[in-house]
Image 1 (cartoon, one colour):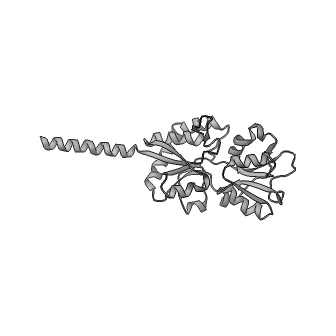
Image 2 (tube, helix red, strand yellow):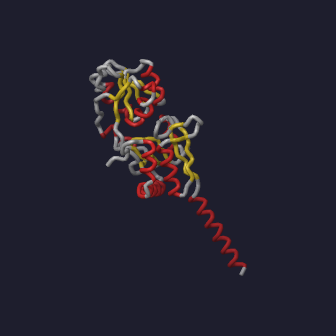
Image 3 (cartoon, rainbow, N blue to C red):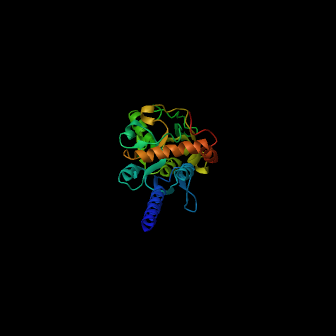
Length: 258
């Protein structure tokens, strides 16, 4: 009788321990300067498409999301140092990054564009920006692209800790162009009063080897179970309509792509 009681209690404790392990916090690294993907509301709260999507995925995984802010150029080293479990911050999937981290299934697929001042006569191409100053986010995919094409064509590449800093400089005349994510630049700059004198250039950036294959969530390579669980939850939020519902709050076009 006592033995059965002890075994029953042991089973209960084990079950609770397993449940607690399954429901432990999922720490997600993010650079909250990338509107509308992740940014801060006036009250300081983290908001944005990937913040809400992350919360929906965490709910499917029966985990609690804890978003950890990190500057972009330190975000991968911080992941590898185990300061958080994954990166959800508009990170483009590239062959070069795959050497260091593992990626989830695709989150979005959005093109890159060039911003120039209206009436400047610049088409945004590397040749047109020879001798000009071009702003990029430090450590980003577009920074690699700018180095490969624009720097070689004679442009000066200015690297910024945040996209907001580059917007301040182009608005004040210290930059001639900015290269970045179409949606982030449209909503984070062009749609705001300070962005009215500017527009997207006609030039289209193309080079999958540099610009990658859409965005994904980065994880440590040895976290295979976490990656599998995340991808299962991601499929679930697509299937139950949560992904589309969240995306429709922030975008007026399909950010997932084909």
